[in-house]
Amino acid sequence: MRPVYDAVVVGAGPYGLSTAAHLRGRGLRVAVFGRTLEMWRDYMPTGMLLRSHWWATNLSDPRADHGFERFLKASKRNGAYPLPIETFIEYGLWFQRNAVPDVDETYVASIQHRDNRFFRRAGGRARGREWRGRDGDRSPLLRPSTAAVRGALG
Image (cartoon, rainbow, N blue to C red; front, side, top):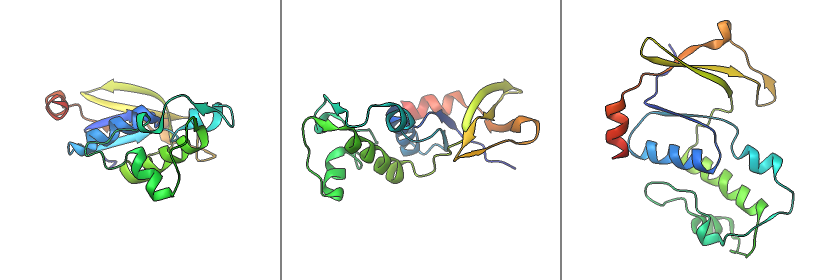
């Protein structure tokens, strides 16, 4: 039987990773689908400089264990301004490895609700190969417990 989660995050960009880190910090079983920082890695101009300062560019985790300052120390980088996109991407990947290590790079084509459960339908490519399952792999993904999620989000 496939795992059942309390929450699912579709998208592994800065907001998706931060959301997943906070949900996990509340003790929820969280699945994250998407290629980490895909839009930043594949669609932003090489050499682009971010207008935000490094100290205003943190992704968020509940205990603030994986902020940009900690990344700079761990990677022996300095907090240059303007911030090169390559540095931000490296930070985002570092954050993902440390705060949300189990991102599933399967692309989600759709999410359906049936019999008080949600199902995902995978599509596209995952890690460079076509991903398909029987019946479009409509496997149970989430049993919604609105009270649990509301309570966790406070």
